[in-house]
Length: 528
Image (cartoon, rainbow, N blue to C red; front, side, top):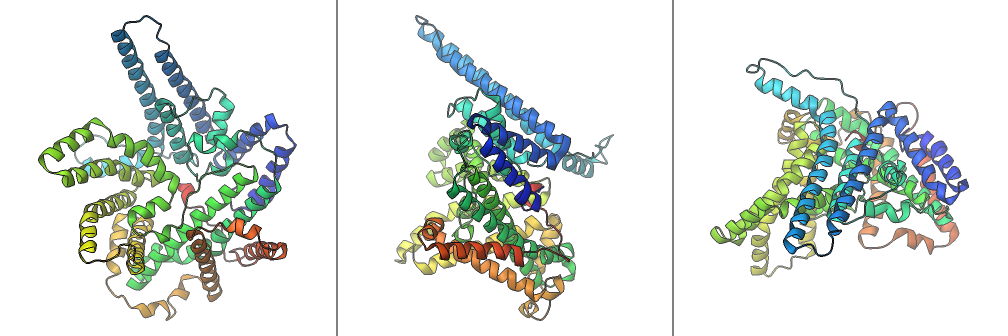
């Protein structure tokens, strides 16, 4: 049972809505909790024990941290000032140890399940002739969504440690936060304060939420079924046998996969956020017109927003204020100047972020390269920004000129396409070979001399893909101009509004990738 399946849309979700509405308000959280565990069990079976164990462990760590903070504040009156300072340092040290224990255990479990075989393979390959033993690779089963709920759990513990939130004393609420079924498989990665105001209220169902939620679900299905699943056929054909295709077809594959990934992931996010909206639960947005970005850094502020915010909050900021970075900044400013000190500080803070970003996606060198690719480009952008600004000022060129804007967007597109080529390639070597092949035998006529039709996609498929991309691009352009589409539609006549809604539903039902010749395409980010 996945988000795009018939079982989810026409059986599981309606049943949850009925039970939720019929239940007393104080029981509605339990209905959602039961639905979350049922959904997770349908995907991972007995591996649900990982989610249960994580929930109980995180709940206890949070209470432990809260108790230490309350003990620190409860110093009796009349205690000497030095003794108060000593007690404060002691409790802060204990809190750091508790937090470190919690993070190391959760991340250690994730690392073992996700990266042990990758580690063993590389150790055996590099040191196999030296070591008197070899590390045996194991068949490890991993529960779906573990990368997502582990990050949520770590963020919760860190926020309690920093005093941003109070530790939750009700285990059911902690469990619901980590297992809310719409987001358990692919996110978005939420902080406690992102959802707590609506997740635990048990609001009754409302017609506006039901209408907007279902329309968003169908919009997500449109992206996934009409565009992404059709593109998957051609993308898999080229990446699976790239040596048989010309450079222009490799470039086409890079662009097609980028579009497929966006339609797939943003479409699933629409289904997820729409599912939450049915119950009155607000989940954070995960995409904001990423192809309007004018730089690699801006692209990542618009793409997989919650993952970027997690890395920014729990890795970038702590590293930025850590002792080694502060010492370097002081040394660099005195000895090397502000510019070099700034570059060094940026590099030290960004490197772990992008290394973790690559590793988070999976245990492959191509994913690590992907993280380092963006680390390098963003650092170069930081380095050249002052020089670029001085050149534009000297030439009396407006940095906001439309011509420059479109050039920056085009440059960012190239950066994105190259990055996704390596991301999708079957290993780093394959990615390098595919990249090099684009500079050989690049005959653009291969795009219309029948080559595309040999990938398994018919003219009708390509027409549906093109129409879907145009529709998504138009909607994205409207949103980029700051127009709230739902509010605008609400002001239109009923027949026009519902005419558009039914057109969307019919598009999903009629022209989506169903029937003979099509197989259900697994959700890409569920594998991360």
